[in-house]
Image 1 (cartoon, chains in turn blue, brown):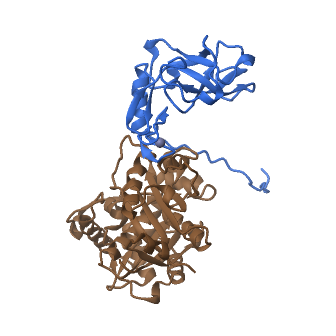
Image 2 (cartoon, rainbow over the protein chains, first blue to last red):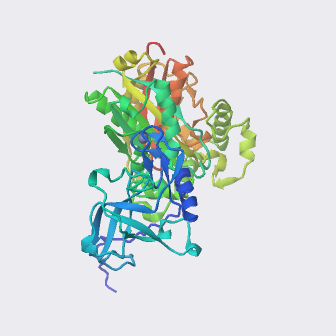
Image 3 (tube, rainbow over the protein chains, first blue to last red):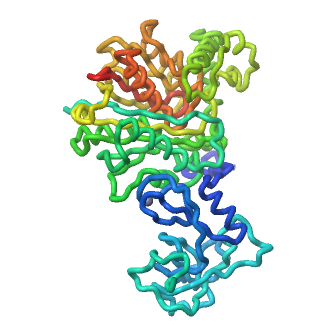
Length: 171
Length: 355
Ligand SMILES: [Zn+2]
């Protein structure tokens, strides 16, 4: 061994902290319904906007949301991206489509996968519906819906995206 | 320069486990009560909003952003955040007002400490380079400090127990306290040590909760017709992260901050000191030169409930409450951050008109 030591410029100090995470009262209600295969949102008592997944408040008005409303698993594409680069730890092989989807009956988009589609044909206003896993696999998770796929319904005009009732465009 | 005053202050109960609620659900009821106290509707009615919280408590990056969901930020509001106790959010808000960019501000702090192992979380939060790799938790560091005090003969375990006993008794009049009761010095001394020389009673409890405050220029407070308490001085000073280079038996930075804030310009009727450990209240009382003229921690202080990232703001709020109730004319509030009282903020509060 040499007497001379190299200057230490780097040390590894890995950090692991364990948490008992709680989603919150409003998200817990949402997840409980989701386990039963039901999509729900919460309506703002002030501006009537329906949030999904609900966080317990209307971010616009700053008031608590209480009223629970059942939503459709049909949705409209608000925006989307085609992912071409693999993401470390993500088992899905590119290219795949990730989209902001507004469920019928809600006013804010959630993010999910689009599949069983021609990626190049995906477009804003397109109508899609959730493809659910078998009931035996349902958990407190949005993964109960494997992905959304296009359905044969007319496109929603851009200005109407985010305003559809739970009964959809025709309703 | 515009004088600035506090017009409203509210805090949640200090609880050991808030259960299922998320941070937004923790904050919203406190904000609602604060707006009500000030006769305002929402964050739209103040010029600036600043919050204090710590993402390490939640274990999620940018977790503080979701706190904004409690505000009602449409149309857009002017909003900022400190990754610190909300006492420093108050400091930022005062700068904003002093610069003429706002006449009023909402300040709130929140912390849900129960999901993680708080003493370890704190060891990783503030200093990722020097002490964090050693994983020295906040209680162990405080225990070393208490040991120094005892070995030098500066305090006795009985002195520490007296702080605990007084805290628990004072907390019996604090509806938000987590720990309160008629506990004698002997009761405390009979408890076995937890991290020697500290007993569990010497350490503030793990708490969940939030607090909020509204400040405004004195002109604005008068226009609102609200009783107000003037913030006549505020300053903060920090000591080195290197514990070996600090005198842990004194709090030089607290004394400096108090001098800069003008504490000694008048009588101090009441002092709320953020001392997470009993011996630290003794260090702070001595560093500030407080005598029997000053009532220390009439709320019970943080030994009765320690809302991380809100307790510093709550100290200021407690002094505000005393002055508004007419129990004091002038007081000081202290907030701290970092191991062994590293970073300290002192606020001087004085009775305004109508208060
Ligand atoms: Zn709303």
